[in-house]
Length: 247
Length: 74
Image 1: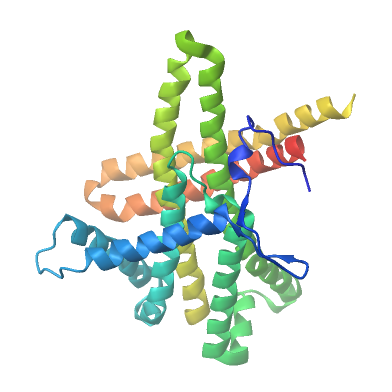
Image 2: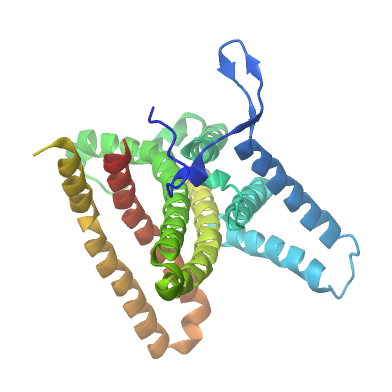
């Protein structure tokens, strides 16, 4: 394990500090700044949706229309990718989308902590998705689910080669799913901090150029924050579709 | 060559992969523009797909960056 980066390092923003130390046996279960921001994200999502839908007007106001748009967005995504069989899993996909989206967006606030920039968090989310999807597939098709690993229209002689490739590609899904989200958030935030460091180095005369760059990058990060939440949920939908419909 | 300079060179080599990502993102948006120019009414269907492709290609760039960080900081 590498030592904690120094105070002025662009990686210092990712340090996890325990706020309420809890140790059970040898396991460190401390309430950290990462867990704090997860709680904040979950609370904000709940507030956003319950307060937004409190009025239940036929003609929605600004707040209610935002809540309805986010619902419609994910519902359309599930409908397009999984079809009507995916309706059952919509609550899970919607929760996943809102949690990741609010985590990414909260991280953009100065002095906040991006919990999606840690592979421990994204790997846990990806494992839940992949294990859940596999369980759904097995529950729906039984042992017939294994035919997922046999590509259609392949000559029998090639099967000993193709099946291991399919299995490896299935097993690498959670890896790529988690690394994509965490690497995007980590690289983006590191880049913001590196350019912020240039502002200090160049001082009053030249500092405005990296500052303008930082403003542009913040807008870009806003796009990435949304896009990565979208990609994470779209891939979840695609995997779910694979498990339910088997190719 | 000492370890520190070898690390620096290795990190530099690791981000060569960004060249391919640049070509990939360019190709995605080139075909997006040409498809919208040919058939502007297809825009609502084509745009989300291009954004998905953009995000998937950009992730490859970040894998390279991640390797560079791993080389530099571990």
